[in-house]
Image 1 (cartoon, rainbow, N blue to C red):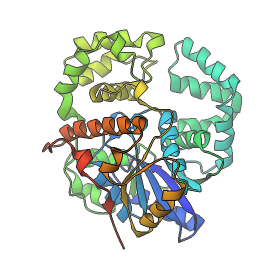
Image 2 (image 1 turned 60 degrees about the vertical axis):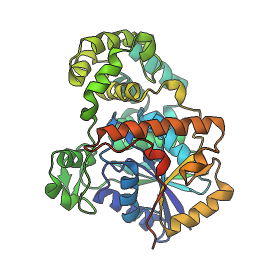
Image 3 (image 1 turned 180 degrees about the vertical axis):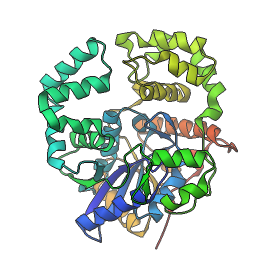
Length: 389
């Protein structure tokens, strides 16, 4: 039996996600087990997830997944390279995943491999550093440097799913083979097409009360209240107004060498809203997504030093009957402790226990984004979702 890994946010889980799981089984066999490495309550674009991680895990299980593991926030809310490294690290640490399935606009695995290989050469890194020194934003510098070295193959870096695919390939260990699934319908940030809709479009609908309009594109009717980071705006402003350049410099991708912490400190004290802060601090070099991630890390009280070199545990968010069998195999084969109950986290080695404690803080602060704030300690009282046959 093949065991396929899928990296996802499922924010929200929709028909396109279910189609990818089905396409993976068509490619590898109907009995393929699917393990998802899913972002927790905070996501890559620098905001809270639409709803909590256990709800999203349950939707994924009912949509065809067998086992859902968490990508901790320190990797989930990060650049594409770091996000991919953390998520692939989760899948590799299971010891059972043999294939990584990912969506791809091009479906051209050979071109993605060539690009991934080139991005690890000294020539590429030297070109990027030179372009960034000249004032170019990192994504543009990355595209230009790769284009000069690869020609048309580098076009994949401008397509969101192909770009992530390249980063997955760079992080992938040799024992896991890649499987590129051509993306159907709309693009990553598009609207609708071929009966599918992008997650970006669906989030806009659901946060705006458009559940009925979103329903045709979801796998089941939406019945959950949505989380909004804007509910924490004043708390966030209070946090960043107390931060100095030395505090900003401790965050990942803080631009300390480029003088960004001073600019962030200045605008944090001047801005009367998060949007004003983002508009003021943004330059041609510093993209909105990067600044939004810095705001999340500041709000959560995390630092770059809080991200370990490797994933120190595997947090189980949910499983099916087949997923439970996989967990049995992982008892002997996993390369990191498997946390199926919160109490297990108290027995983790020091580094893992500390990261789990930070994740508990992230969950408590996510709770403030909900319309009705639940009591603290959510992480310590929630076990995996079970969707048994």
